[in-house]
Image (cartoon, rainbow, N blue to C red; front, side):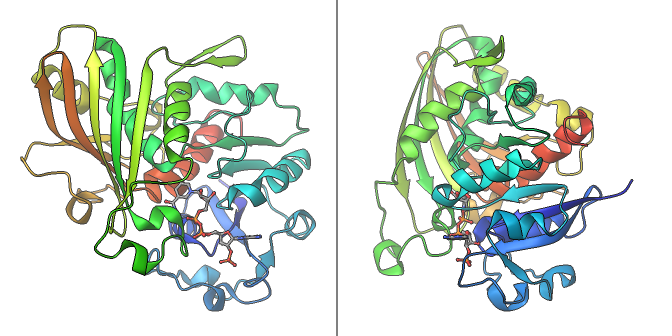
Length: 351
Ligand SMILES: NC(=O)c1ccc[n+]([C@@H]2O[C@H](COP(=O)([O-])OP(=O)(O)OC[C@H]3O[C@@H](n4cnc5c(N)ncnc54)[C@H](OP(=O)(O)O)[C@@H]3O)[C@@H](O)[C@H]2O)c1
C-alpha cells in the first residue's frame, strides 16, 4: 500500500511532537510537512523543537523545514491529509480553508467540534458518527475532530455503563501540566500547588461527552439524555489526567458486573486490527491504589498510551465510584487523531 502524505500543523508543540512520534514509522501515513508559528518557520524541525514532550526525535523529521502555518504554503507541499495540533483560534479558519481545498483534516483543536456536521469521533465509542462528514459542504475535503483530552477518558468510563442506564455523571479531574501545552502553566504557579480552574474545560467535558455518547439520527447527533457535571483542577503532574467519576445508575448492578463490562469492552478499531488501536481499550487495575500517572500511563505490553486505565471501582447505594487515567497527549490527542484517520481509511471515507 502506498502511504498517504501527511502534514502536521503545529508540529512543534506537545501534541505535534506526539504526532511526529506516532507517525514516524506508520504503515499508512508518512510525514511530509510540518508547520509551526512564525518563531519556528524557516528553521529545521530539529532546531525548532525541544522534543520535551516525547524525548524522541526521529531521523525523518530532523532536517525537515518547518513551514509557516499558512494554507498556501501547506497546499504547495503535496499532501493527502493533515493532522492539526493548532491552538483553536488559529485552527478555525485554517482547517476550514484546507478542507475547502479538498484536504481531509483530523483535528485536535476545539474550533469545529460544536458544528452540527463535524463528528467528535472516538471509533470504539461512536463509529457511526463518522458518517456526519457526508453532510459537510466541502469539495473533497472534510473535518473530523477528536474530543477534549479529559473527555476522551471519561467516555470510556461511561460507555460500558449505558447498559445499566445512566441517570447522571459527576467527574472531578486532576489534570497534568502537558495538557496546557508547552508554555501553558508557569512553574511558579503549579509547583507544589493545585489550581482549581481550567478555562472552558468543564463546559467542554459536559457538552462533548453527551454528544459522543449520543445517537446519530437523520444526519445529526441527539445528545445522550443524562446530565454530566465536571469540576477541573490542574495538578503538578507531567502527563496523564486522573479523573474521579461518580455515576448514578438506574438499573441494578454489582461491582463485578461493571468490571466485567469494562474488561470485555471492545470496538471496531480492535475488530479491524488498526495499527494505533490498543488490544484492550480499557484496562482495569484491581490494586487499591491504582491507576497512577507515573505508573500506569503505558504499562502494559503493546499499550502505547491508548488504553484508558480504570481502578478503585466501588458501589455506594445506587452510585458507582471509580477513578480513570487517560494519557492526555496520546489517547486524548495525537493518538486519537491518528486512530480516526486509520478508521476513516478502513471505512473508505479517506482514500
Ligand atoms: N496538550 C494536550 O494534552 C492536548 C490534548 C487535547 C487537545 N489539545 C489541543 O491540541 C492543540 C495543540 O495543543 P498543544 O498542547 O500541543 O499546544 P502547544 O504545545 O502550545 O503547541 C502549539 C503548536 O501550535 C503552534 N502555534 C502556536 N501559535 C501559532 C500561530 N499563531 N500560528 C501558527 N502556529 C502556531 C506552535 O508553534 P511554535 O512552537 O512555533 O510556537 C506549536 O507547534 C490545542 O488546540 C489544544 O487545545 C491539546
